[in-house]
Length: 207
Image 1 (tube, rainbow, N blue to C red):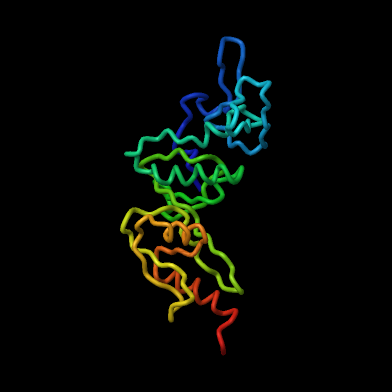
Image 2 (cartoon, one colour; image 1 turned 30 degrees about the vertical axis):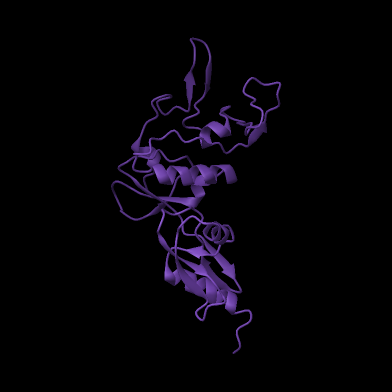
């Protein structure tokens, strides 16, 4: 089975994992490092320390996590929105790729787990985050919305005061929208919100 790594060769290290930064000295390649060996928390004695910032430094290559999370991709890039979501995953786990899948360019065209490396965001490759579910009273519930949608986007919110346990809304960016989003009650589809509402009602619904 091919991996995304098979589709590209790092321009910095030519796939060796190390590169010479001067005539006599080499260092691990920041571009290829999977950042899986943990993080040092730098103090103000280090030149890379920035007060008030994330000062975690990769134990292997020395890259700063804040730089890895800081997305520099153009907003016009095909995968800009996905890269922003991936950056959020990077701030939450040292193995963010485990939450993602990719669709290979050739071979068996089925979604596959992403290899243990950060995506290259190749415009010719499709990426997506793995489906996440919550378990409520034994029911698999689709993960609620986590991102702010575009203005006037229709969405559905769990509302147990309604006969069906949910209601349709339009995102206007008001206090109610943000409160529901932060509470994890919003879904993009009616099917998903119905599952969520039914799972909550299963605790108290009369049989």
